[in-house]
Length: 123
Figure (cartoon, rainbow, N blue to C red):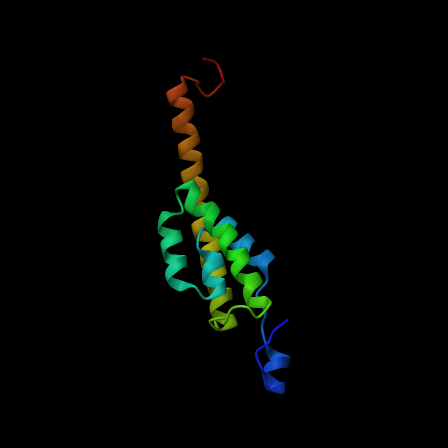
């Protein structure tokens, strides 16, 4: 339970972080879940290193756990206006998802080429 006192207006309009959505955002675009939680520096670092698997997985888990801590009142949320979250999601999910999907596709194609498998699946 949240131990921080809120005025009546703030308690009604208080936005709680969703661990589910923070994890989903980080799953599609590394670092976007951290942006959702207000961890801007961590989000940028994960975004820049997200092409590596380990930072990407760390980002998904960290985003969900941080959002859960914020929702339970164990951690103070850095307030992010809702309009900025929506804007980041529109730009980030569409543009960066395409970038990461293209990167993964290139890595798979390169791995198959190294293995000597052509487009038809014949060695």
